[in-house]
Length: 292
Image 1 (cartoon, rainbow, N blue to C red):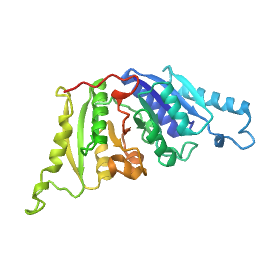
Image 2: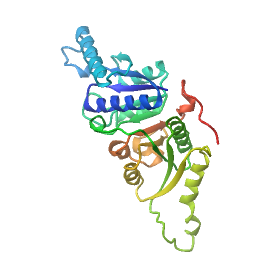
Image 3: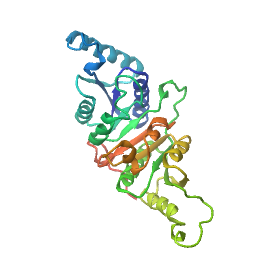
Image 4: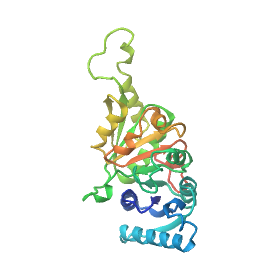
């Protein structure tokens, strides 16, 4: 598996480097560090100075090299707009995953969330993995053993299940299919017009589980309440959370149609966002997921 990591020299960029390194170690992948230098990163008087740009790229390379320890990587830099540059690098490197840091106020702070991130999510040729804030500072990074996937029966959710399946098989992890039912409670539902809805959340989970290979350890759960809050709360017990994206419109209406950007900003575990049509089994270098 080939992994591209967005790197900008910030603390959040260090989170991305550490997560990308962990994923590479566990997945046996190759790393490409994608360094995008925007003219705005330098003072106006230095923006056109080629020597300053070269020095900036060199400094970022050295920091990445130290941060990644002995892990080998390819370094590619661009002086251009983030969306076009990251997409170009991911395509050139035939990346299966693109790892980014979470929201911050550094040079790449506009990437996630924001207009650039929305366009990147629409253009990305592969799933995007967002590292939680402070990931690089954690003392322990246990192996990924539990992968959650948000499922609502949509095409986007089905692609998310495909990605979760691929990763789980590569990592020997188990999958937890999560369906969120706002207002749903596991208690009694009044008789009448609402009666047919009694078992719908459970049926949704069952449909998600039916897409998984029979040999893959998996279970499902119906979460109650607000979608974003429920997923964030559940993420405490997950090593990775996979969410689908329709790749259009504001971010708050794209992720499974209802999950807010708060899931990506505040989830305690890494979040994999799957742009529509960019599942791992369609990525240039990925192997097809096993079929059940």
